[in-house]
Image (cartoon, rainbow, N blue to C red; front, side, top):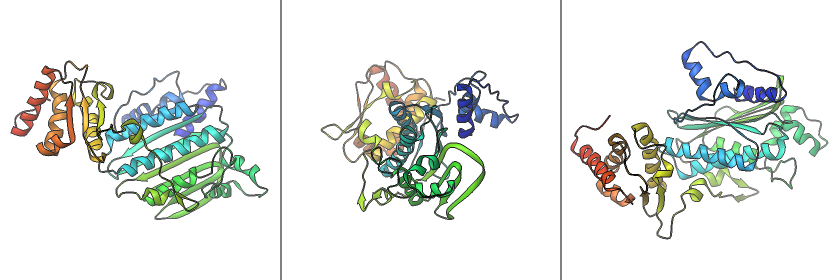
Length: 362
């Protein structure tokens, strides 16, 4: 669907109207709206998605490196609040692959529409799948001028995932698709490319298959599913020319520890609101993950500028977190600063009620 929506955006730019008739099934209709497909296919009739859940990050568009970074940071922020039982290397692997594939759009696709990406979180199977699409010249047309080989489109896709293959070595080293493919294999995931008249599908269980398609796709669609059921050996996946690559990740940049090894967490910036459990749930997950992934020090939760929270929010974030970790681990991993006296009373009451088994606010 992301490929269809991207093509529709190109039609709109060419002043070709597109009208979307939503599915009759209510579940599918909701999916089209939440995923942003409806908006990108027919923006005249459908509003941009307001979905802020943890099952997916709606389809986004980026036109340059700055917009790409904003989109990837938004995705990682959602994943940090959505995933559980994942390692730091898992999140770094997803970030690296996303950036590399999206960067190919900016550097090689020659797409007048930029690129589009979408992420789906499969919580039950512990996998994250992202799709990156453009309506540019396509991988075969991009690589064909680099050699005199008379390859067919699907053969160029096979070549594209080999180490060091690039259209222009001055722009990149040609390891983006190769590294992403390796990550999917090492994490027992899946990898799929469609471009031109070629299709490439790869998984650890069924191997690598390339084929010629009957209907050409003028552009490139890359779908990568990365599993996090077992810790990924990132250094093994990202070994180029015999040297292991250790990328700096989102956590290292946004939540860089201070001189005492503490991570500063500004709640007024991180939270979308303070009046409901729905607003508190992603914050609790994010705090729990940060504490678990932190190598040393505490997570310092700064509540400056927050004069009031609801009882349900206090319980969802701090009450549940206290019970989840226990008193000693909670005190070891977290420190609350700049807490308004009224907010402190609400947090204390939420924790007390959770520990005593009393009623919690709905």
